[in-house]
Length: 501
Image 1: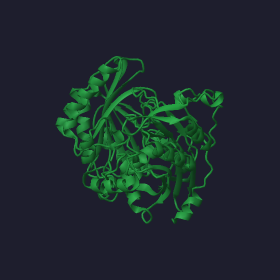
Image 2: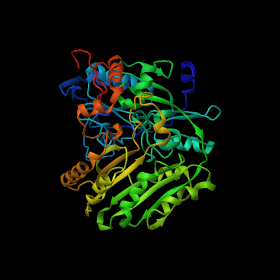
Image 3: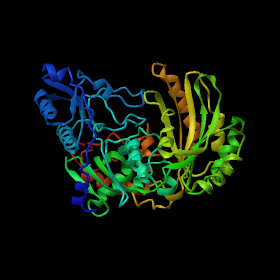
Image 4: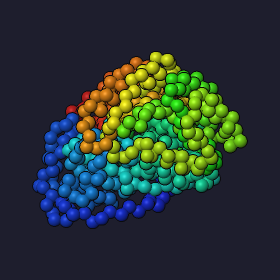
């Protein structure tokens, strides 16, 4: 698709987002003469009232300051151990709003966060004393069933993608929690129930519209700005803010065979051993995530598999037969289910507003040592839910060359995630301490990590994680974001000698 055709197709009707008239600064004209803020290097600065007023007037969306209605909701992210207070929140309704916010941030060298679904477990979508560019109002989707393509805005959630495509007999790989933001998922990777069949979410991106650090709205695909297109697919938010994605869609029955099958916990080790062996041989239509879980309130440890078979229904029983024989079944809830409902089934298991600490890493094989580390060190606690689970890779994901996109980790068979969650208001320290100890026992069996799960990795770990793609990514960073405006991510630092780095 040519650039002109992209922008013509991208002029889709955006969902109306209604905002109440705000009180606070905007109504009573009490914006301070100077707004205290910090730069990307955490240096204190003061922003003039007139500049703030000009930015507010230029936006189709809203500019929120700490005394404005809606600020305290807009600043929150999913993980409630993250409690930050930005100086400004720009709620952007279109690409022009994003450009204005980026230009403002660059002018003041502001610490800048980009927020969509607010699913970053480490809180990359918010910051203290900086600017949040909030894409939540940037909602829209348009499907072309003839060429099997979807245009979806950068602020949209995964549920919108599924709702728009499945009724047309089409689909593509998305995550496993419906309220995840498209932008964060797609630029970092995108594991999901169709990944083995169709590749990662980023493997299905055909073109993007992106606002880079210079405030320019650019189109990128395999032919135009191809370096940027390559880097966005796996480099995360390092190069700009994607305001529109074009994804390849695939024929898909809206009804799949899937659900949850729960086993006797006494069989947990043999089940994980089975998964490590069987998952590599299974059909690409098969996706299964084993979860080892110690729930709060003393309900007892459990092990279950969340599964999805997207092949012909007549073949499903044969596909699931090895799993059903792998241990003593307690509950078998596998059935024909609307894929949209299956995509939402994990929402309650991933509650918004809970405190969380998660760590993750890739596994090449599920060894006996790894299984022992997971099972023997799992600890039940009355106030905490603790877990370890595997996101299945393999299949189509692993057939793509490590340098075809910026996502280098094509060697991984699974993405292992461990951690815990607890209710807001509970003392955080002991639960985080346990989560770190648990990860320490498991991490020696991992190799590299998924940047969308990045929590407390060092800069050296981040750089090494991009493997042979790192030097190429630095060159792209130098070209499109030489001052490192977009640094709240798995950051690729530019190496140009500039005063404001």
